[in-house]
Length: 305
Image (cartoon, rainbow, N blue to C red; front, side):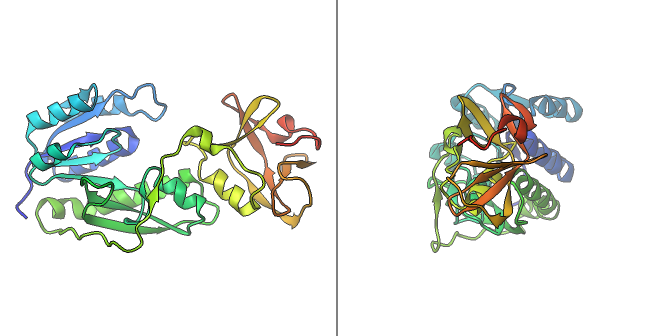
């Protein structure tokens, strides 16, 4: 592989900005330009940071209006390689074919496992003890391209999705430190994905976060930690109120009751029964965007979620 001279960065969000800062610091002359989009309505937006980057470095940062506009910008730049981080529009096969070294993206799973949407959420939902990420070439088939880098990360038993994202972020930035220049210089070679153990993830929507209290306490606890902030959160409905449960722990003893029943209201917590006669400890709930003590909202053992 010849040395890669001109890279276009395509991305958004804080992680995208941190990766952009890293690759610019490591090989500034290789960064040709940056393309992002206006996500200022999103709480996770880093658009101002991308604008500041442009001012500080003199690099052009284009704000694409839509997928077609992004493709037009990329084609006009004629890059050797496109690096994609936190991008939400598909790149067409014809565009990928027009880029000499294609496009490289980051997927939060150990490919070929968990191809598709929300892979980290699905991994935690499934009780995985190990997560990871893959730096891979985009291809016509979903998340099926060759793998450049892949890192495994042990996931602590009580880690939520926010903790998992932070572990991946830290590992990814450290990996780029040691590998980005090698990739550009042709010293790093990709490998095909294995066809064994391929699995796929369906897209998730906020409504999919509704808790089924008939499941085991372990399953419900995993369900809650898989969707905690910065994600929309697992939730129940009581008295017409949408109650987001940001965290939960498994009670140490058996507790017989109806699934979803508030079985104890303590001084600083509430217990809710699950389908295996174990209970979850809730200390706070989020109502209308405000986090409140659970005992204030779920104040009676007559309550059934």
